[in-house]
Image (tube, rainbow, N blue to C red; front, side, top):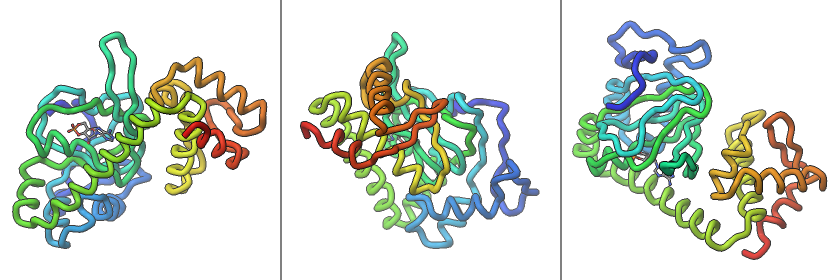
Length: 252
Ligand code: CMP
């Protein structure tokens, strides 16, 4: 498995002497979060407990690689805290940001299901903690509980829908409309998760919408001047949502 070594790791097994990985995430929270993630939510309690008992906890610093595209591994992950960036890079270093994942979301299910290599890079965007589930444990639960496949299929369908939407936006919309949509989306995710602030760089916004950092910077400066958004030390706040929505809808 291509996980960064020497990181904090404990099994969540109840028989183990269990420590909290950080002061802000306790084991009960870990279990509650895992039981609520898309994969486990619909499982019987006994199957949830079986999977959680086998999960390992791993911690990553901001910017650390969790795994790289093309590698063969036998696990999938659920985000417990922090944000994970899913992206694909070109050999010359350009990057397309496919998704920013939040606590409760899972990733690494594609290679787990088809047994092939990773389809994208996963990197810690902020310090984060992950629950790692081994392929054989997940497959054992799926084998004994066919209804659990539904949870996987729902996640895959949601990702396909997002990807279709993303492709359509990149092909059909000008940069300002794409950027307005991305800013609204990132902001709603932040509101849903009740986060006070979500820091997103202009480079990350550019990677998210398939544009250059310069074009993102130009738009944000114009919107800042027009009182639509406030850009302050890397933090972005929407000041006039109606106007931003109007930009997002143009030419669509
Ligand atoms: P896997 O291929 O195992 O490793 C990379 C992971 O990134 C993949 O599983 C998915 O969990 C996730 N992933 C790939 N493409 C997308 C996407 N378009 N949106 C969100 N997550 C994705």
